[in-house]
Image 1 (cartoon, one colour):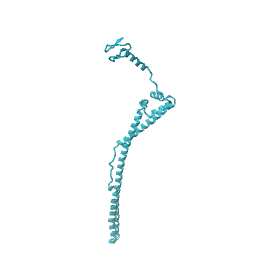
Image 2 (cartoon, one colour):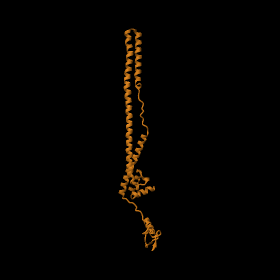
Image 3 (tube, helix red, strand yellow):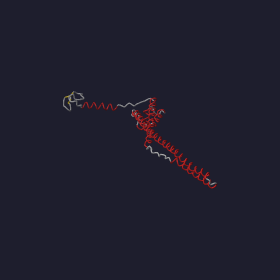
Image 4 (spheres, helix red, strand yellow):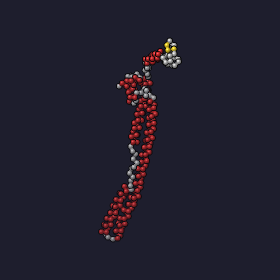
Length: 237
């Protein structure tokens, strides 16, 4: 017979704890220590997988890591494009940019008919010979100028409209790229969550498609009996 170290009540031989206060006895502590040591001595089971299952697992992981790497690259490329400021301040065309050739043409026509009128006045200085060149010297340049103004305005309006449409398209493309990038990020997060389920069997250093290719080679070549042995070999390299 022995007594509880806490409350002093008498206990039966072999009691693991006090029935009165619940304190663990010396005998109970000895028993717990023995059980703990016994469980520590048990070897952990070594995981094993068939070659077929190992190859299926590696191929699945290789496909998923390849897809993840492609998503990461595409997201980074899109972010680099989106980081550049969008230029929506393209210079607009003025009418004069397209009008000046007509102005030069009008000046040339004026000088040409002026020379004709001067030549006519020297050869036969009569009213009839000078009136026609004089009229043409005014009408033709004026007609060229009026035509030039109309055509230059239309051309400038058309070019400026094209620039405005291009800016709108650029803005729409940027919005589409932003939506696409958000969709890719969402897809990547789903894939990461899927891969996180395999994090216990895939070491951090091997979480890439190139490592999966090496694992597959080790299994197919017979250098590793299964996936786990291939991982162990690759970790040592």
